[in-house]
Amino acid sequence: MRIAFIGQKGLPAKSGGVEKHVEEIAKRMAQQGHQVFVYVRNNFTSKELTQLDGLQLVHLPSISTKHLDAISHTFLASIHSLFCKYEVVHYHGIGPAFFAWLPKLFNRKTAVVVTIHYQDYHHKKWGSFAKLCLRLGEFVACTVSNKTIVVNKALALVTEKKYGRVSNIIPNGSDISYSPQIDAITQWGLKEKKYILSVGRLAKNESVHLMIEAFKQLEDASKISNNFKLVIVGEGLYGDDYIKYLNTIVEGRDNIIFVGSQKGESLEQLFSHAYLFVQPSTLPKISIALLEAMSCGLTPLVAETAENREVIKDDGFTFVAGSIMDLRDKLAFLLSRTDEVKRVGQRAKKKMEEEYSWDSISKKIIQVYQEILN
Image 1 (cartoon, rainbow, N blue to C red):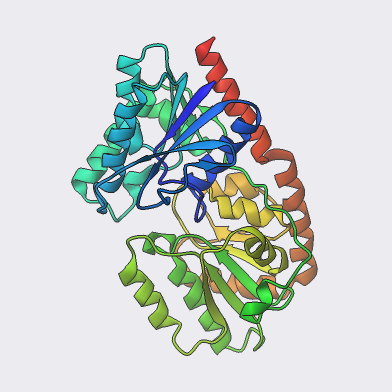
Image 2 (tube, rainbow, N blue to C red; image 1 turned 90 degrees about the vertical axis):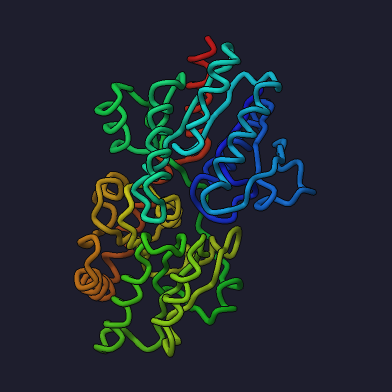
């Protein structure tokens, strides 16, 4: 099949989210012999990079501003796709899905698929007009496309209740595995099981500040050893003010470390040797970082949301969403329960191996394509 992906910023993925999802499924489809084309933005992927792991990277320009970057690039990609004889055009995200009607209208033999990762209009960074466009994109995703894929059960309920669309539930996945090496993490002075790890985008609605404040309170109350650290992996996106705020609240705290965006061996080592994984975000989505942490046998402590509960079930712990006090108390409890934390992490690892491999996920998506084309 000739398959095109539209909606992602580009490849290689610099962090989790849509880019990671597209990269993992696309390269596996290419390995299976499909011709796979991924549309990328010039401000995200170097123009010199035209191929990656068997994928063809299609470079198109965009209007590089907060509100026009995605929509301008997706419009051009949708127009470009009309002349490329793709058998499948797969949009990722409800914003890009706004233009899914173009290949559906003008290329009737092309299968048009949309994956909804998140109801982006809940994001506080968008204004009223942008949220309206995102809601229209969701409408198109659920009424115009041939098939709608969602990454969790909560989104499936939304698409069925609002639009009468029965979606295919195909979750995110993880292929990160335990690394016995520690050479990469020693650059930050980290030691085995002597740090708490958080991985994600440094944005206000990810609630990174809650985790920092909870950790600080434990330090101030001497409920955490002097050599125990909090390690935060990730970068900001249109969030310079928030990053400045985070840097302000950690001033003078040597045990709170920002290590920026990490991938490959360094990220695997960070996951593999942490004591606990904490995800304070209350956004209604399933984080790839959470899946990766559990794949490495790392016990998760996450905000109590339906999406997080769907993943961890009994193989992890939750705290009251948005509560610094409850997060602090749960951290204190788990820091004193070493054996229990280890047991839960082992169960989490087994679950990931059985339910969330990228190989099985890519095969399920190919089956969706084939159902439409047949």
